[in-house]
Image (cartoon, rainbow, N blue to C red; front, side):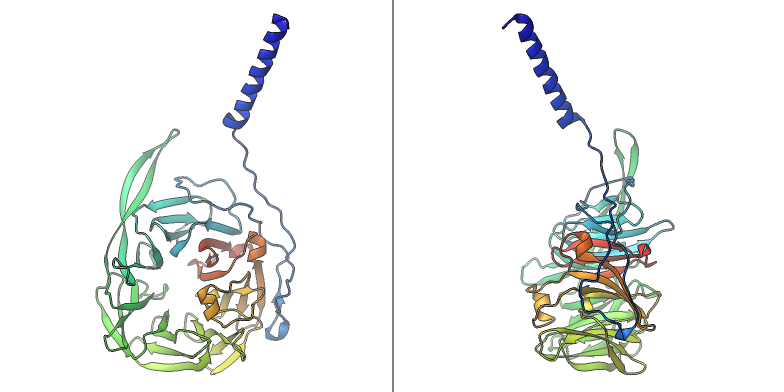
Length: 433
């Protein structure tokens, strides 16, 4: 081989190596966004017309092909916010939304670390606003300003759960980047434990003057419980009622009404009572119903409730009107835990409807995780009878969606929910329908 040929070969190898280095390590790949839409077909979920008019959306929202990961950001990104959006792939321990003059803000807690994150309705930026580590947070109840909350975690003795009140304490620091210096708002968590006798609790209605109070049910030491209303930090505690029941779920749908439902099981009858917050009087609303779960609207005039069917192998979903004392079955089957009432239109409800409900004992099998669902999101108006399909969640997300803990933003332009399958956090833009 001649010297000239050898030099030429060496040059070709060097050029190839340089090109490979540029391609794999220097070049910044462009980001593409999938904007394809497909027709949304009726998937045989058994919805038909006896309850009212049924409308199906003609298109589905943008399909998500990749998960939204949690990253710290100080400036909004330019990417269009998906109609159906996976906000956090990590398990979530509760959330709360609020609004500003320009956007909707969502805050939530990472279940594993206790870190608090913030997302926005008009962009895809996600900010870690508190890195105070509190492991194993299972649930949280927030005030209306989303700056204080009560969370449930494992107790130090591992003998059960413990509840803590905490606030987001503001700290401002400057963060320098290569392009600019941005003011990053960071918070730390400070608070105190609540009574170890706490059985359950719920936050007050977000609309009205009681929006920063909490109802706490405490073990009375005699096999019963006492209900107290207090501020979030436990101050100004006032006892409202006594009850011989401990295994109950509590709601505070309207300022003057607390709803107490015995915990649902297919193997026992359940009851729903209203408690007047002014005098503590109990009123039975519905009862003697197997597998009962309830969800009360914002003025306590209607109750969506789910219960076992006649063979205790399925679900029946109904609406009870407290003025007429009449119930009407809905044209679909779902659990009350998979719905949320509008607070701006108290006859409108949003529900995640399973496409198929396997034969099982409900709600027990769903609670225990032995059964899960693939859901479609629907809107129901109990006055007009209209039933409107919004989105096939599982089909559009490209993964199984078993929605729970549905929550509307204050202006009700966004619907948030947690996917029970993996506890990830999602949003759906109601303005897109």
